[in-house]
Image (cartoon, rainbow, N blue to C red; front, side):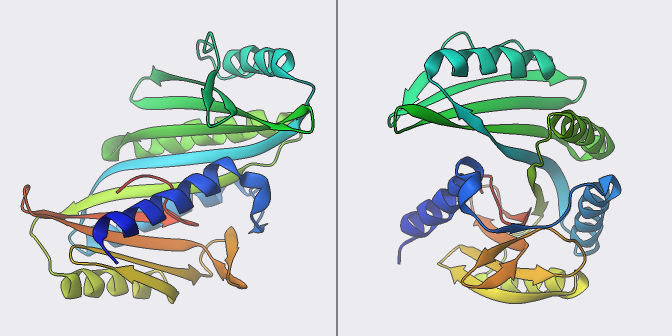
Length: 254
């Protein structure tokens, strides 16, 4: 299987997790507000212990909204959620493969906050989904976690329990072979007390998914709980190797 096919498949997996949040078996309780901070801190610590310099962090919160009567009500939801998140509303929905999408981004201090409101036609009505993303750099991890917790509180006040994904990216300042990438990934797995579930690799990319008991949230993959994915990609042009860690899976391109 070629590199393009593999990376397209992994990217599709992540997009399905974000957009079709109601279709995945999901476990865990997000009421423990400190756990998200602990997940980010733990992954960052283990990466840096493996000489991988953390550069960026992305957290996503996805919820299924009540079914809507149509595009007018979706537009009203767009205005309401943008106001609640203190972001300017997207003035008009885009059509993506028959799906209605509102989205916009704002920058708060050092964090980028984006909302994406999706309406999927279904029997004359719309299934609605909201995805809120917070991004930032390594030196603002605490600010990212605080913004994430504020969004979680906002969603919970509306009786919405978000599904949460975290992606942390870093670089190793040398080009590693596929075997060396696997060694680094397994070192991370050992330090995070994780067991392997599945593995994909090609000439420059390795992706290994697994499960750890260090945090609660997980998805069900082939009848097994999974809540950790680590990917490595050799960047020959920049003469380094990029690592991405995702929980429960990677939902960002790498």
